[in-house]
Amino acid sequence: MRLLDYLFGFVALVGLICTGWWAVYQSANTPVNLQARLEANANAALAEQGFDWAGVRMHGQRAELTGKAPSMDAIEAAAETVLTSSGSGGIILGGVTMVESGVGTAPPVTPYVWRAIKTGAGDYILMGHVPSRTIRADLLAYAGSHAGDGAVEDRMQLANGAPAAYWQGMARLALDSLAELDTGEARLHDTRVRLRGVSMETATRARVSADIANVTAPFRGEPFLRGPALWSAAHGDGELVLSGKVASEAEREEILTIAKQYYARTVRDEMEVAGEPHPGWLNGVRVGLPHFAKFRSGEMAFEPEETGLSFEGEASGSTIAYLQQDMANLGGPYPVTVFADTVQVDVDEIRDIDFQADPVAACQQAFDAVMETNKVYFETGLANISRESGLTLDKVMTVSERCARDLVFEVGGHTDSTGEREANIALSEARALAVRDYMVSAGFSPSRLTVIGYGPDEAVQSNDTEDGRAKNRRIGFKVRERSE
Image 1 (spheres, rainbow, N blue to C red):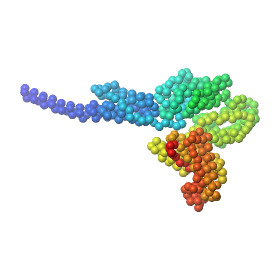
Image 2 (cartoon, rainbow, N blue to C red; image 1 turned 60 degrees about the vertical axis):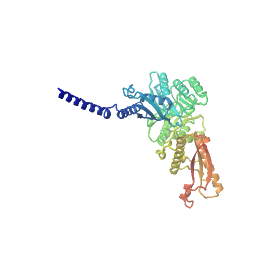
Image 3 (tube, one colour; image 1 turned 135 degrees about the vertical axis):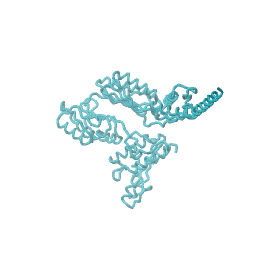
């Protein structure tokens, strides 16, 4: 019997040793394994809830939240997600016991743009930047209250950089205004509140326009509302749609020919020959449609009673500028309105540049890369910018917007050594000033720009060859911090 007791004791001892070994080295609740499991669960929960900016490092059962947050309530929501990512258990049940924040603030987005679109079906699309998850949810609910049976599509993204004033109130006002229209788009661009759209009622257009025009400072309201168009050209999904009434088959054929000449993709003709002729309106189409064909989105419309010819939508800065210039020189019996928003162009030269790591160096690198492969052209011996410079100017504006807000830029003009030095210095300064004036007209702050004419004094190539002289005739940018 004593031998059997010894045998049972030995087996129990072996089992205890094995259980202890498993508990220390293999159990999910050992310090090492528990920490790894909690960290994996927390990061998986953050990814599932859309907190792509956040990460977690576990220190035992204490979590450290890391990343660059777009808003304060995003930090709070992410922390709550981590705290419950392994259940509600604490020390005993093996859950997360505490979340500490090591989160920084994401850089402010500039420009800060939010948009709301109301479609002809009564659906709403909300897109662009929004300051917090709370405000995002509020705007979705508010749009839903206006949409009724219509759908509300959310394309918004959290981002820092919203104006300090009552941004949420302006967004709600924009949705209220859209609800009064048949179709339209509201856009908050920093402190600008822009509303465009269509309403059949003259009184409604007047009232809603007044509401937007009289918004409280520092916001600035810019409304453009019209009635139904007699004729229009609209950018659709990969096509340009021509619709409405024209007075003759000859008008229809000419408009269709212009559209096909300047629009590279499909042109859909829904025009009908009907109604009375409107002398002079076709001149506006001849001048304006080639520019409008380059728009990224929007509508060109003719409404003879009130608004005349109008251009709405999104386009590059140079496209809008050249359209405005040509329509201003047109004259004619009808008013012209260009109510368009500038959009940045894609710039392959800066695709791999990190603008956050070293803002000054990155911004300078971006300007240098663009100006090395692109050129601002001028009329011979003059400071008038040639229109073949449009893409270069668009790229310059994209770089300017990507650079940090506290940076300032020197626009420098350079010439070759041909002619008198003083005359070259004067010409180079005038050309740099022309570029500066273009940037200001496109919406860039004049307080961040200075101008200097170097003439032939900073040549990058020998002036002994034509190729060298051509490279010396250039515009350059120098980036500095504002405090310098």
